Each structure stands twice: as C-alpha cells, then as structure tokens.
Amino acid sequence: MLAGSGFVAPAPADDRPVVRIGVLAYRGTEEAASRWAATVAELGRALPDRRFELVPGSAAFLTGAVASNRLDFVITNPGHYLELEIDYSAKAIATEQDMDGTSASEAVAAAVIVPARAEDLWQLTDLKGKRVAAVAPDAFGFRAVEREASERGLDLRADANMLFVGYPVDGVVAALRSGQADAGVVRSCVLEALIAEGRARADEFRVVGRRPSGTQRCHVSTRLYPGWPFVQVVQTSPGLGRDVARVLLAMQPREGDVVWTAPEDYQPVQDLYRTLKIGPYAPFSRLGMLDFAWANRYWAMLAATAALWWIIHVMRVAHLLRKRTAELQRAHELARLKGEQMEHTVRLSLMGEMASSLAHEINQPLAAIVSYARGCERRLASGTDLEGVRAGVERIAVQAERAGAIVKRMREFVRKNPSRQVPVDPAAVLADALALFEPTAAGRAVTIETDIPAALPTIRADRLQIEEVVLNLLQNALDAVSKQPDGRILVWSRVRDHVLDVGVTDNGAGVAPGAVPLLFEAFFTTKSEGLGLGLSLSRTIVEAHGGHLAVDIDTPGRTTFRFQLPLIEEHAGV
Ligand code: ADP
Image 1 (tube, helix red, strand yellow):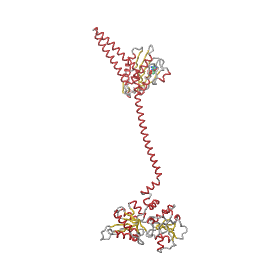
Image 2 (image 1 turned 180 degrees about the horizontal axis):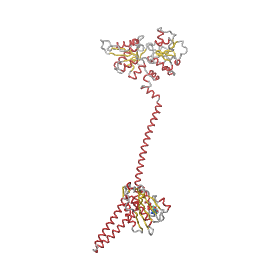
Image 3 (image 1 turned 45 degrees about the vertical axis):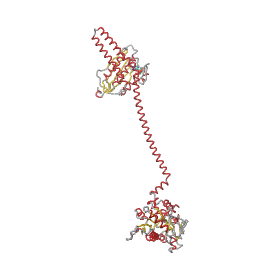
Image 4 (image 1 turned 180 degrees about the vertical axis):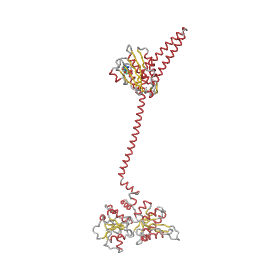
C-alpha cells in the first residue's frame, strides 16, 4: 500500500545526477511504476547524462517531499497539483493525454454507477439517503461528483451514507455487487474498461446523472477536467525544466501509453475546489479567507463603515470635550480678571469720591503749616521768642507728617492689594481711623465721642480695610448730622459672644424705613454728590472678615451702623 512508498536507492556504480519524479500512486506503487514507465524511459534515453527515478507515494507523502526539496518533478492529479501550485509555486509543464482521442482538457471525469436494475436511482439527487461507495474522500473523482451534487443542493457527506473503500477502485465495484452500497463513484471509463476486460457484464451497471462527455468515449456524471499534469518544482533549474518539457512534448505516441501535450488550463479544477471550499479554499486557509471576505464584502463594508463612524464619533466627542474644557478655563480666567478689574474700578471710583475730601484733608495741614510758618517768621523778625519758633517748627513738622500719612493711606487704599488678614489690635485700628477722620470733621459743628475699652482682645483683620469701613461709616454719620445744630457721633466697641462689636451712632435725620433694604445696594445714594458705594463696599469687607454689617434704626433719633469681627481663638473666651 501507499504507506510503504519511498525513495528507491540509486545503483551503486552510477554517479550521474539523479532527477527524482514523484508520482501519485493511488492504485499502488506497481501500477504507478508501470503507468509512467514509458515516460521515464523516454526521458532517460533523451537526456542520458542524468538518471531519472520514479518516487511513488500518496498525495501527503509527495507534498512533504516537495516541501523538503527532495523532488524535482511530480506527476499527480489536477487537484493535488492545485495545492502544490498555490502552496509551493509548482507549475505544470505538460498535461497527460490519452491515446484514445480524448482532449487533454477533458481527460478527467467521474461516473456514478449503480446496478442496472436499481429502479429509483437516475439523478444525482436520487442519492439522498442512499449508501454511496467511493475510494477516498480526497479522491479527485469523488470531489468532482461532490461538486455536481452540491450544485444540485445535495451534500453527499451529510445527506448520503458514504462508504470509503480505499484503492484500488475495484473495491467500489465489489461493494455494489455485495449489496453493501447502492451506488459507487469511479473514474470515467473504469466501467467501460471492466466490461472490455470481461470483468463486468454490459448490462450489470449503468451510469446515473449523465452529462455531456465531450471527447471522452465513456459515460460521465460530472463535467470534464484536464488530465494529470507533469509538474516542475520551483527549485528545479529552468534549464532542466525546459529539457524535460521538450522531451515530453516530443514523445511519440505508442498504443496503450500516455503522451504529453502543452500544459492545460487548470482553472476548472480551481473552480471545483472553490465550490467545495476545500484544499486551499478551506474556510481558514489564506485563499478561503479571501473568498470569505469577498463573499461577505457588503457586510464587511457595513461593519467597516460602522467602525469608522464609531472612531470618528469618539474622536469628535474627545475633541469637543477638549474644546469645551478650554472654553470653560478661558471663561473662568476671564471672570477672575473681570473680578479683579471690578474691584480695582470700585477702588478707583471711591478714589474719585474721596479726591475732594482728600484735597480738603491735605489743605488743613497745609493751612496749619502756612500759619505756623508765618508765626515763626514773625518771631524770628522780632528776634525775641526763640522758644516760640522752636514750638512752631515742631508743629509744622507734625502737620507735614499728618499730610504725608493721609497721602500714604490713600495710596495704599488705591493699590490693588488683596486682603491680608493678620492679628491686629482693634483699638489701634479705630484710633487710626479716627485720626484720619479728624481733619474732615474739623471745622464742622459736630461732636465726635468714643466709647472704646482701653484693652481689647486681638482680632484677625486687614487693618486698612477695617479702617476704610470705619471711615465710611464716620463720613455717612457726618453727612447725616450736617444739618443738625448739635450733631453728635459716637464710635463704640464691645466684646460680646466671642466677637468684637463695633458701631458708629449718630443723631442725624435717620434713614427712611423704606430705604433700609436698599442701603447696602451698590450705587444707592440719596446725596447729590454721592456714589452709593460706601456701604456696599463696607459690607463686602466685613463679610470677608466673617462678620456682618447692619443698620439699627429702632431707637428714635439714633442711627447705628454696626459690624462684628471675630476674635482670635485664644481670646475667644474673654
Ligand atoms: P453714599 O454715601 O455715597 O451715598 P453709601 O453707600 O455710603 O453711599 O450710603 C448710601 C446711602 O445710605 C446714603 O446715600 C444715605 O441715604 C444712607 N445712609 C448711610 N449712612 C447713613 C446715616 N448714618 N444716616 C442716614 N442715612 C444714611
């Protein structure tokens, strides 16, 4: 059997280069050797400087030998050739041609034979549910029948009971005769040969599902395929290939022998493999995948489009997210800058409002300086009161320092300083505010009183801002009492419930009850020259210190604006 196939050892004395020709021995090595003997003999005769050797074997054995480069040529069936061509780039250099006039392109076909008396078997589709004998699942004849059946909607392996009896083909005939099989698959002309040899009666079998047999003189059940090719392996030198092809094509036909013709087109074999999705077209083989992809190209395009859409969508979302985040950051930055700008603008507005009082404030020390200077001048002229001159110069210096302090405070206030809360003595802050206010109140018919304990607990505050609040309240109180004949303003302070209470009380005209809710609104003013920012800004400052600025109009004839400042922890219990 095929398992015993192998290389034949060369004769010892012969050192000519050996050319190995693998042959598919589907009916045993001896049959193969005798079938191709004439071809090998002719090659040996025409190319005497080489020794030609036949290497018979199964398709798997021959494929392995080609893969390991142990063969130069292969003679095999068209199906096996297709695999060698696709996997190992082997190429047919000639096609077998029978001497009986059959065209080389129509050399191979198969016949499905059944006992002549079988009543129900006429078409290939009648094989459904029947027992069908064949030599092997990969025999080319069986494949050819499988294709015809599959094109008629019948899957032989699934819909019929297949019985593979192995080579030689006589086993198929035996299975039919013994009743083991209802039908058998054989190569075309096998039946005719059996009859000619007297091994079968002419009325014993008939061929079902007959098709046009072309140049074949036998009955066939399949379409016709080209004959066996003489195949050159890719490693074989082109020169040797040319020599062998020349000898093959020039072989003189002799009765019973095979002759060779130019290589045929093996496309029909390829179509068969593709239809059955086998060999190189098996589902997971390279070509099978390509075929699968082509067959499902519309789905693949749909899937690819969907995937593309998804990728674009994800990228778009990511892009939008980045854009929105950047926009948000820009908006925040803008808001922050605007806030800063706003604060600055408010300060500048206050500056404007205060410019007139500043002029007034500075004027006072300046007027005092001028008056003291004149006094000193007079005393120096008389040359008598040097002590008076010394006192006058001292006062000039004090007034000049006061003017300088006023300017410095204004400058500090206008500067864009963020709130700096540090521990401070509230009594000192109030004293400073009162000192600053002194020039403004001077010359007005108003009494400013204070009720501030000498020792107050420390608070955490921005000194300048708190001074600003107190100055605002003092200014408002002054405005409120300006028309009073006995205007009085009281600045007071109390420690109560962990907070410091600070208030400015006046006996002015008071606030109209309807105006109370509007007092702390920016730009609310009842004064012709007012800006309406003082209380709004003061409340903002107090709240930034964790306190609350409120008005108290409950006592008739007294208006009090008061606010709280938190004590530093260690004094909280005081
Ligand atoms: P402005 O002093 O520029 O008007 P304010 O915000 O400081 O701005 O004050 C808003 C308004 O609150 C004043 O116009 C005035 O009508 C009222 N007001 C503030 N303090 C007093 C007060 N002590 N007595 C009466 N009304 C006051």
